[in-house]
Length: 560
Image (cartoon, rainbow, N blue to C red; front, top):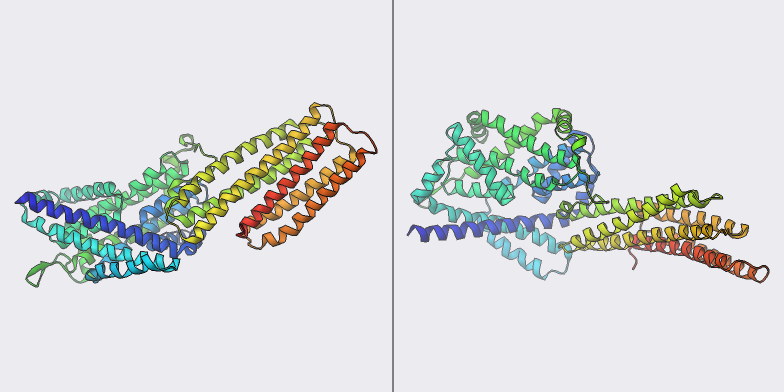
């Protein structure tokens, strides 16, 4: 009898949890797609002002409904150098407050509408042609799944009260003593570590308490442990990253652990404050339709969760810089692990596509800067009577770096494009793939020009004065053209192609005239065949640099 009951409960509880987690994923993906540009604006608004950083963390997490995603993303941004450690600490504190929104969503008395909302929204999700409508319907489906999953968990947990073995087991975590409080907190921590979602474990806690399996005190203690368990995700994401990324993850752990410790120390007093704030005992039982209900317990758990995170953040805000210094002490420079990658693209950023696309944009800007430096190094390397080996080696080194960058960007974007993305992010990612390839090709042709110069030097040959002057003039024009396109890339100027195209045509026309002049002079005076071949290859390489720069301008403009 017990085994049949246990299997029925298990199926409902596991099924409810699965639907809840799937709902959270749909809700998060839908909200990210709808608010994609706003999320980028939020991340861009982060400054060293601790209040702004906390606010950004709160709003970002409130939108995507996952503090784990936010903190993992922050670790990735710190690892890539986009965000400082001080900024990251503030955002993580805000994320802890933002994650409490999930609990308040569950407080809403719309549980019975979860399944109808899921069904109604699914029609728009399946049959709507408008992408924005589909993502909005996906978010609505997510809300429906969240409530339906919670209802299933409640139903599954309810019979547990009739099984003595379970009642005895849960009695071990009765938070009426400090040992029970610590035991319940540890259980919440382990459960969150296993599920990898604090929202899910909060939902499990609400389901157990709503079914009367655990009391309000035990549920509150579980919530405290869940706040520690949620830090594990960011910690795992920090493994193998930069020292600052590790510091951000450790800061999250320290912040939450200290908060849990001081609340445990005043736990009975804290629960008394919660009850006074609500004006009712959340653990009170009410008979309804012949059954026992706990109408205030979900609100009580949400209040415990919010109260803890808000108070802990307010206490810590004045000490953010002190926490930063402590983290520098705990993770010193000598213990830093240098990432093997050339780029700072972290796979954890794939969870937030809009931020991932911005991170790729930053790496492409680095590629544009490197190509400009290569053009400058080329002048330094071959501009004098002898080849400056130091600058030549810099060009070869930078060309290898750009090869690696292009490879890593391509792998990252391929993984990103495998996700379910809004059309806007998909198109941007495809443009970025093209731009990374074009910049890598520019570096190849700059290196080819250098090799052509070296070939002449090795043969003890030199370009005639006229050809040398033409090459120098052409180099200046192509370099100015590259800078124009690079500025357009940095500003995401969609009109840059219209500006670049006539200038590119002028360079092509100039190259044609230079070639014609050189060939016409062959009949007037004899030139070494190698000089003619090298000179022709050089001007063709400059034309190819210009062509690839124009391709970048067209990619920025969204042209095929």
